[in-house]
Amino acid sequence: MLNTVFTIANPIKKTIINTHCKVHIFINYKALNVLKNDKYLTEYNFFTSYIDSINEGAVWADQDFKSTNHFYNPYKKKGMYGRNSAMDLGIDYYSKAIQYWIKGEFNKSLFYLGAALHIIQDMTVPQHANIRLLDDHRQYENFIKDTYEYIKEFDVSTGAYLLDTIEDYIRFNSRVALKIYRKFKDIEDDKTRFYRISRCGLPLAIRTTAGALLMFYNMILPSKNMNMN
Image (tube, rainbow, N blue to C red):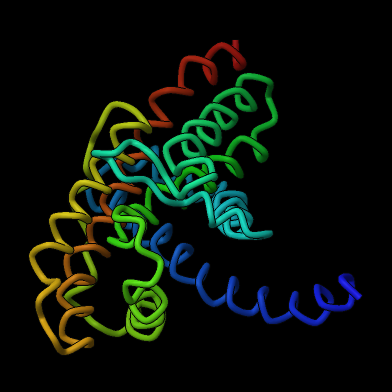
């Protein structure tokens, strides 16, 4: 009986995941564009060659209910009750990306980088930082899915945010997300509130993704050079 339930539910879950992950893939491509426009052309060419692996990791990160770990409050320093936090998961994925690169398993390395980028991007969503699943979480994410390609104010083409560690990116995005939430939470009209939040959050996701790509490139470059010698 239980297997029957999961067989019925799974196609629905995968449809939701595929729709949601289009946003993450969109952000990854926009981040590449930021690298190009910021004149990081070597890095742009490098990540363009691995973009399929990056996107596969970004999609995988939401499958099989792993998204219940994509929450982190930067002040309480924890995620959802009884689950790993987004900080724990992001560190784990990023560490695996580095380890697989050193081993010479390059596609697997960029796969886990894509999963780590997914975490960084999720932390720009206020509900992932204040851990309020019932606080318009699904409605807000649906608004993003419906509008991310069409509203020009959501788009940025330059200005990668350069930080030092994966922890810095998760902490930074979650803190900014909470500030955005507090600024706009009293707007009564849902679409207006979601628009204001998205106008800040989506560019933040793109720029921090671009910065995290640069951080990773600078981290693996010594290993890359060593492998080439």
